[in-house]
Structure formats: C-alpha cells, structure tokens
Image 1 (cartoon, rainbow, N blue to C red):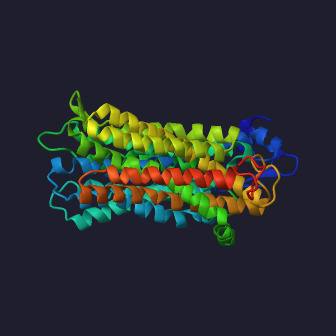
Image 2: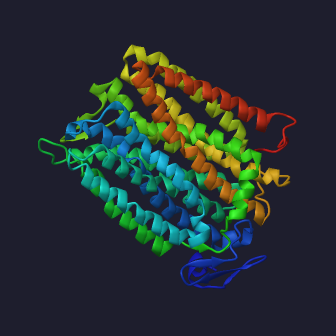
Image 3: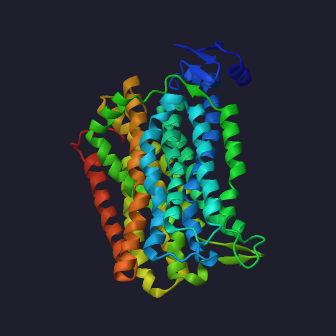
Length: 468
C-alpha cells in the first residue's frame, strides 16, 4: 500500500494492533507511533507532514514574539523618546506574557485538536502584528499603549507549548529528541529572522524617517498562509490527551521542578539573550548596530538567535545518542565559560571579540535547549518504572503526563526571557554597565551544571542506570 493510499483511504491501514481511522475534520483514531508496522505503512509520512506545518506556524509565532526586540532599537530614529527602563520593559514584556500563556496553551491541543488549535493560534498572531503596525506609526503613542501592544506579542510565545505538546504524540520515543529539536529549532529561527528582516523592511523605500510600521504589516500574509496550511494539511489525534489530572500529576513530580529550572537556564537564556542582543550591541557598539547594504539596513544581532536555533536539533540528536543529562552538563559548562569571556572582552571595546563570545553562549544554549527538552520524556518514563526509559515512552498515562510536562516546563523556562532583560536592565541603570549581571549568569550556569550532574548522572540517584 502506498503512502498516498494511507492518507486518502480511511480504515485501510492494517497494523499489528490497530487500524488507523481517518474521520471528518482530519481526526485520526488509533494512532500509535511505537507500532513499527503502522509507522512504516504511512505513519511516518503523516508525522512528517504535521511537523512541517507545525514548524512554519511556530516560526511565525517566534517572529511575532521577538518583533519588539528589534523594533525598540529603531524607536529613537522614529521619534520615540523612552528611558532605558522603559525600553527594557518593552523588550521583556512579550516574554512575560508569552511564558504565562504557555500554561493554558498546553491544554489547547487536547481540547481542540492539534490541527484546529494551530489554525486558531496562528490567527491570533494577526492581532499583535496589526496593533504594532498602528502604534509605532505615531511617535506620540503613550508608553502605556506601547507596553500593552508589546504584551500582545506574547501570543507568539504561547505557541511553543501547544506545538511541542502536539508533536510529541506523533513520534516514537526513540525519535522524539530529533523531532522536537527540529520543531523547536524551526520556531526559534523566527527570533533570528525577525531581527534580520525587520531592519531591512523598515528602511526600504524610507525617505527621512523609517517605515517602522512595516515591522508589523510585513508578516500578515505569511500568517494567513500558516493558517491555510494547518487547515489543509495537519491532523488531529484523538489520543492526544494531556488532561488536568495528568498535569497535576506532572507538577507533583519533584523532577518536574528540577527540569523546569534547568530549562530556564537553557531556553530562558536563549530567548532572553536573543531579545536583548540588539539592544546590547546598540549600547556597547553603536557603530556596529547596523550596516548599510544598498538602500537597506542590516543588523548583525540576528546571528545570535540564528546559531542558537540551528544548534538546537544538534542538542536533541546528541541527547538521543549520549543521553540528555551528559549533554546538558557540557552545555552549562560552555555557557558559564562564554559568560566569563564576555565580561573579559567588554573593556576591550572590540566588537568582533564581543560577538564571538556571545555566539559561544548562543550555541551552548541551543544545544542545551535540545538536550534538556529531550530529558523530560526520559525522566518521566524512568520515574514510572520503565527499564529502558531512553527508548520506551511508557504506558498511556505516562505519555499523557509527559505531554503535559513538556508544555508546562516550556512555560516555566520561558520566564527566563523576562528575567534576563530585566536583570541586565537593572545592572545598566544601577552600575552603568552589564558586567555584574553577566557574572551572576555565569554563577547560575555553574550551579545548574552541578545540579544536573548530581541528580541525573550520580550513582545512587533515583534514575541511576538509566540513560537520561
């Protein structure tokens, strides 16, 4: 039977234990990616198709989420006069709201279906895009209004939780690390592309002042395409149920909170540094903030989020092979070293040394994102009594608890995107530079490295003998 037959003819996939049933509204019954025969007879192609459109929708979510990180750098040239504290609030507010929205978004896939919720969540991105287009067009827009519109960008941050929770159901345990890594990396690239494209878009054709409103208008057609693609090609799985009881059980698990703290260190650092990087460059090296390319401006700030995003699937793949805990320990070690190098090069006034040291941090955060996220299903499987937790996702209850944990931990971790800009902003306003904040981050990474090694690699730990 061909893959095209699999997707067009309901009730025809004969598997070892179940028949896939395709129902109206693109609902699929009896999905089981651990069933090798079902997986090879079409399941793999269905999963890949859903992953592709999930990545695109999540990519746009990250674009919208990070629009303000690059827009704030252009506000002075557009006639806005905000204080340093106000600017850092505009940078960090989308992360605060996005992290908070990840909690309810975790439950949306079971409630509406992965396909249906992707259509809705992508559509919600139109609100902050349109609102930004209007408010930045007038330099007299009050700060309170600007902050509210920046908060609306948090819709983009919420998408990650529902997207990751949805994709975890489509793939077998042995391939979750790579699939989740690709899904997350595709989304994370949105942060980079926002910082690459927005400076170009707002300067093209500008005469005298920037066309800063285009930072919002530009993305609307792409959002509409994502909605159409989700409606046309994605599926809902009836077995995707991370109910409230499963979430409560996940939160009661002590390792939930350990993993959440580790995820603040990895993903929180990635999104926090990505959002503040354009501002750091503008403050420390204004001459290198933008480069003229033909009639457009190019900001090199996008490179940080880019390398961090591309490193994420590598972190998932390394975790699949060597275990997430070992890779995470190494990532935190490199992040700590990178932070100390940043402090050392700041007094030198050398932009390229500054950029290189921060890129080291971004690569490590990307690898740590993938490896830490890969640890979650393995830890929950191990805690449920599964002997080979790295390859076996456990029973249905364990899978549902894991799906809930993936969304909830991503929510807690995203608060790092609020914490890091706020700490850096406080350091800047109180001491005049960023060194004290970066020292604090280095200490935090060392602590997290030690916690990971003690809890997950130490002999005698509750998961000893498992390849976490």
